[in-house]
Image (cartoon, rainbow, N blue to C red):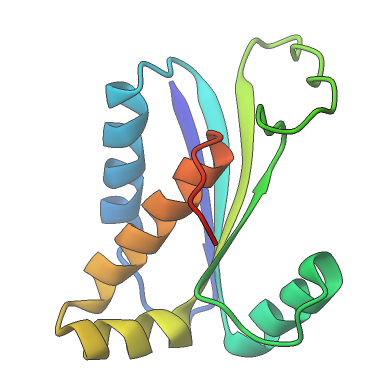
Amino acid sequence: MYSIIIKTSTHFPVNKKKIKEAVERVLKQRLVKECEVSIVICGDRQMKKLNAMYRNINDKTDVLSFPQNDPTQPTPPFPQPPNNVLYLGDIVVSYPQAVKEAAEEHTFIDEKIQQLVLHGLDHLMGIHHDE
């Protein structure tokens, strides 16, 4: 069972069903049985604020991930929750940045948002890229 929580403002129209289906498909492929992940679709102002607060970067980005337990970090893992559901963490996507990138790449906004969410999911699962 997957718990995928998506929060977005009404002025950022996204296809929540397609996002959930894409996340579930990847989790099944990676043999993750039960987990929870939250996804927030926000504006550039909020994204810039999060970047400043957590990354010391005074700029906006397209996606941020906040893993609950990053296996690549030397910190000890969180204890197993009593309900045995793995909480992966949070993914934050900037809707305006997704719109801009979709236009540059000649793709649909919903497809770009899905791509960004799945990129964030990789980070939550400890899959990182070179900066």
